[in-house]
Amino acid sequence: MRKVWQVVLVDIHPTSMLGTKLILEDQQDLLVRGMSSTGTEALELVRSIQPDLVLIDYKLPEGTVEPFLTEMKNISPDSHIVVMTDEDSVALFQQVTSLGASGMLSKQASTSQLIHLINGLREGIVSVPLDWVRSGSWPNMPLVPHEPFDELTETEVFIMERIVQGITYDKIALEIEVSRRSIDNYLRKIYAKLGVSSRAQAIEHYALYARQNKQLYA
Image 1: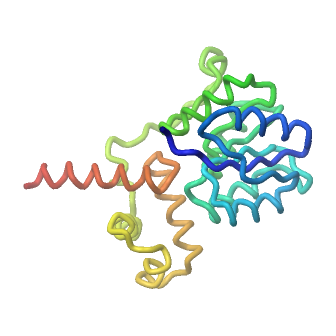
Image 2: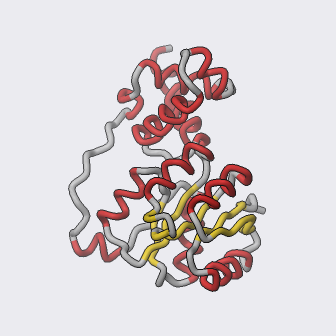
Protein backbone atom coordinates (compact mmCIF):
# COMPACT_ATOMS: atom_id res chain seq x y z
CA MET A 1 0.00 0.00 0.00
CA ARG A 2 1.28 3.46 -0.89
CA LYS A 3 2.13 6.03 1.74
CA VAL A 4 -0.82 8.18 2.75
CA TRP A 5 -0.02 11.74 1.73
CA GLN A 6 -0.87 14.51 4.19
CA VAL A 7 -2.59 17.39 2.36
CA VAL A 8 -3.22 21.07 3.07
CA LEU A 9 -5.90 22.93 1.08
CA VAL A 10 -5.86 26.70 0.58
CA ASP A 11 -8.86 28.18 -1.23
CA ILE A 12 -10.70 31.49 -0.88
CA HIS A 13 -14.00 29.70 -1.60
CA PRO A 14 -14.97 27.46 1.36
CA THR A 15 -17.53 25.49 -0.64
CA SER A 16 -15.02 24.69 -3.37
CA MET A 17 -12.44 23.74 -0.74
CA LEU A 18 -14.85 21.34 0.93
CA GLY A 19 -15.62 19.75 -2.45
CA THR A 20 -11.90 19.25 -3.11
CA LYS A 21 -11.50 17.70 0.33
CA LEU A 22 -14.23 15.15 -0.40
CA ILE A 23 -12.67 14.31 -3.78
CA LEU A 24 -9.21 13.77 -2.27
CA GLU A 25 -10.37 11.74 0.69
CA ASP A 26 -12.29 9.45 -1.63
CA GLN A 27 -8.80 8.19 -2.45
CA GLN A 28 -7.29 5.78 0.05
CA ASP A 29 -3.87 7.43 0.03
CA LEU A 30 -4.75 11.11 0.55
CA LEU A 31 -5.68 12.70 3.87
CA VAL A 32 -6.58 16.39 4.23
CA ARG A 33 -4.95 17.57 7.46
CA GLY A 34 -5.65 21.29 7.22
CA MET A 35 -7.69 23.88 5.32
CA SER A 36 -7.34 27.65 5.10
CA SER A 37 -8.70 30.60 3.13
CA THR A 38 -5.64 32.83 3.53
CA GLY A 39 -1.98 32.57 2.71
CA THR A 40 -0.90 33.64 6.19
CA GLU A 41 -2.88 30.86 7.88
CA ALA A 42 -1.63 28.42 5.26
CA LEU A 43 1.99 29.14 6.20
CA GLU A 44 1.26 28.15 9.80
CA LEU A 45 -0.47 24.96 8.67
CA VAL A 46 2.48 24.04 6.47
CA ARG A 47 4.88 24.80 9.31
CA SER A 48 3.05 22.55 11.78
CA ILE A 49 1.95 19.71 9.46
CA GLN A 50 4.89 19.53 7.01
CA PRO A 51 2.46 18.14 4.40
CA ASP A 52 3.34 16.04 1.39
CA LEU A 53 1.02 18.14 -0.78
CA VAL A 54 -0.37 21.68 -0.74
CA LEU A 55 -3.16 22.65 -3.13
CA ILE A 56 -3.29 26.44 -3.11
CA ASP A 57 -5.37 29.07 -4.88
CA TYR A 58 -3.38 31.45 -7.10
CA LYS A 59 -5.41 34.43 -5.84
CA LEU A 60 -5.47 34.89 -2.08
CA PRO A 61 -6.87 37.62 0.18
CA GLU A 62 -3.33 38.97 0.64
CA GLY A 63 -2.62 38.97 -3.11
CA THR A 64 -1.30 36.39 -5.54
CA VAL A 65 0.46 33.23 -4.40
CA GLU A 66 4.06 33.97 -5.40
CA PRO A 67 5.49 35.24 -2.07
CA PHE A 68 3.84 32.38 -0.20
CA LEU A 69 5.42 29.77 -2.50
CA THR A 70 8.93 30.82 -1.56
CA GLU A 71 8.12 30.89 2.15
CA MET A 72 6.38 27.51 2.07
CA LYS A 73 9.41 25.88 0.44
CA ASN A 74 11.60 27.42 3.14
CA ILE A 75 9.35 26.03 5.85
CA SER A 76 8.78 22.60 4.30
CA PRO A 77 11.26 21.88 1.46
CA ASP A 78 9.88 18.42 0.70
CA SER A 79 6.26 19.53 0.25
CA HIS A 80 4.80 19.45 -3.25
CA ILE A 81 2.85 22.64 -3.97
CA VAL A 82 0.24 22.72 -6.74
CA VAL A 83 -1.23 26.07 -7.74
CA MET A 84 -4.91 26.10 -8.70
CA THR A 85 -5.84 28.92 -11.09
CA ASP A 86 -8.35 30.23 -13.63
CA GLU A 87 -5.55 31.91 -15.59
CA ASP A 88 -3.38 28.97 -16.54
CA SER A 89 -0.69 29.60 -19.16
CA VAL A 90 2.82 28.46 -19.95
CA ALA A 91 4.25 31.74 -18.65
CA LEU A 92 2.43 31.46 -15.33
CA PHE A 93 3.42 27.78 -15.02
CA GLN A 94 7.08 28.70 -15.45
CA GLN A 95 6.74 31.53 -12.97
CA VAL A 96 5.25 29.48 -10.14
CA THR A 97 7.50 26.47 -10.69
CA SER A 98 10.56 28.69 -10.60
CA LEU A 99 9.44 29.72 -7.09
CA GLY A 100 9.08 26.16 -5.87
CA ALA A 101 5.69 24.92 -7.06
CA SER A 102 5.61 21.34 -8.33
CA GLY A 103 2.77 21.97 -10.75
CA MET A 104 -0.26 24.00 -11.74
CA LEU A 105 -3.83 22.98 -12.54
CA SER A 106 -6.89 24.77 -13.85
CA LYS A 107 -9.78 25.11 -11.43
CA GLN A 108 -11.94 23.70 -14.22
CA ALA A 109 -9.91 20.50 -14.32
CA SER A 110 -11.77 17.24 -13.83
CA THR A 111 -11.40 14.99 -10.81
CA SER A 112 -9.42 12.50 -12.88
CA GLN A 113 -7.02 15.23 -14.04
CA LEU A 114 -6.39 16.29 -10.44
CA ILE A 115 -5.72 12.74 -9.27
CA HIS A 116 -3.55 12.08 -12.33
CA LEU A 117 -1.41 15.11 -11.49
CA ILE A 118 -1.01 13.99 -7.87
CA ASN A 119 -0.14 10.43 -8.88
CA GLY A 120 2.45 11.83 -11.28
CA LEU A 121 4.08 13.83 -8.48
CA ARG A 122 4.45 10.63 -6.48
CA GLU A 123 6.60 9.33 -9.34
CA GLY A 124 8.51 12.57 -9.82
CA ILE A 125 6.56 13.56 -12.95
CA VAL A 126 4.98 16.95 -13.64
CA SER A 127 1.92 17.02 -15.94
CA VAL A 128 1.20 19.87 -18.36
CA PRO A 129 -1.76 20.36 -20.75
CA LEU A 130 -1.31 18.70 -24.13
CA ASP A 131 -2.68 21.87 -25.76
CA TRP A 132 0.46 23.73 -24.68
CA VAL A 133 2.61 21.23 -26.55
CA ARG A 134 0.41 21.12 -29.65
CA SER A 135 0.10 24.88 -29.91
CA GLY A 136 3.84 25.37 -30.00
CA SER A 137 3.51 27.99 -27.27
CA TRP A 138 6.14 26.32 -25.12
CA PRO A 139 9.14 28.67 -25.15
CA ASN A 140 12.67 27.59 -25.91
CA MET A 141 14.29 26.40 -22.71
CA PRO A 142 17.96 25.71 -22.01
CA LEU A 143 18.95 22.07 -22.20
CA VAL A 144 19.75 20.36 -18.94
CA PRO A 145 23.48 19.62 -18.87
CA HIS A 146 24.40 15.98 -19.32
CA GLU A 147 26.01 16.07 -15.90
CA PRO A 148 24.00 18.55 -13.81
CA PHE A 149 26.38 18.03 -10.89
CA ASP A 150 29.01 19.91 -12.89
CA GLU A 151 26.84 22.97 -12.31
CA LEU A 152 27.11 22.76 -8.51
CA THR A 153 29.49 25.07 -6.70
CA GLU A 154 32.05 23.71 -4.25
CA THR A 155 29.82 24.72 -1.33
CA GLU A 156 26.77 23.09 -2.90
CA VAL A 157 28.70 19.85 -3.44
CA PHE A 158 29.80 19.91 0.21
CA ILE A 159 26.20 20.43 1.36
CA MET A 160 24.97 17.51 -0.76
CA GLU A 161 27.70 15.22 0.53
CA ARG A 162 26.80 16.06 4.12
CA ILE A 163 23.08 15.57 3.47
CA VAL A 164 23.73 12.15 1.95
CA GLN A 165 25.71 11.32 5.09
CA GLY A 166 22.64 12.16 7.18
CA ILE A 167 23.97 15.37 8.72
CA THR A 168 21.24 17.78 9.87
CA TYR A 169 20.72 21.13 8.18
CA ASP A 170 21.51 22.96 11.44
CA LYS A 171 24.88 21.21 11.77
CA ILE A 172 25.73 21.88 8.11
CA ALA A 173 24.97 25.56 8.70
CA LEU A 174 27.43 25.59 11.62
CA GLU A 175 30.09 23.81 9.59
CA ILE A 176 30.07 26.35 6.77
CA GLU A 177 29.29 29.27 9.10
CA VAL A 178 26.00 30.40 7.57
CA SER A 179 22.45 30.71 8.90
CA ARG A 180 19.95 27.86 8.79
CA ARG A 181 17.90 29.93 6.34
CA SER A 182 20.91 30.14 4.01
CA ILE A 183 20.95 26.34 3.82
CA ASP A 184 17.36 26.45 2.55
CA ASN A 185 18.44 28.96 -0.11
CA TYR A 186 21.34 26.71 -1.12
CA LEU A 187 18.96 23.75 -1.37
CA ARG A 188 16.56 25.61 -3.68
CA LYS A 189 19.47 26.36 -6.02
CA ILE A 190 20.68 22.75 -5.85
CA TYR A 191 17.19 21.39 -6.62
CA ALA A 192 16.88 23.72 -9.61
CA LYS A 193 20.29 22.68 -10.99
CA LEU A 194 19.54 18.97 -10.55
CA GLY A 195 16.01 19.23 -11.92
CA VAL A 196 14.44 17.80 -8.76
CA SER A 197 11.82 19.06 -6.33
CA SER A 198 12.59 17.35 -3.04
CA ARG A 199 15.38 16.36 -0.68
CA ALA A 200 14.75 12.67 -1.31
CA GLN A 201 15.09 13.09 -5.09
CA ALA A 202 18.28 15.13 -4.69
CA ILE A 203 19.82 12.45 -2.47
CA GLU A 204 18.83 9.72 -4.95
CA HIS A 205 20.36 11.61 -7.88
CA TYR A 206 23.54 12.45 -5.98
CA ALA A 207 24.05 8.93 -4.63
CA LEU A 208 23.64 7.46 -8.12
CA TYR A 209 26.08 10.01 -9.56
CA ALA A 210 28.64 9.22 -6.85
CA ARG A 211 28.37 5.46 -7.46
CA GLN A 212 28.78 5.88 -11.23
CA ASN A 213 31.87 8.04 -10.83
CA LYS A 214 33.39 5.68 -8.28
CA GLN A 215 33.02 2.83 -10.78
CA LEU A 216 34.37 4.98 -13.60
CA TYR A 217 37.59 5.95 -11.80
CA ALA A 218 38.15 2.71 -9.84
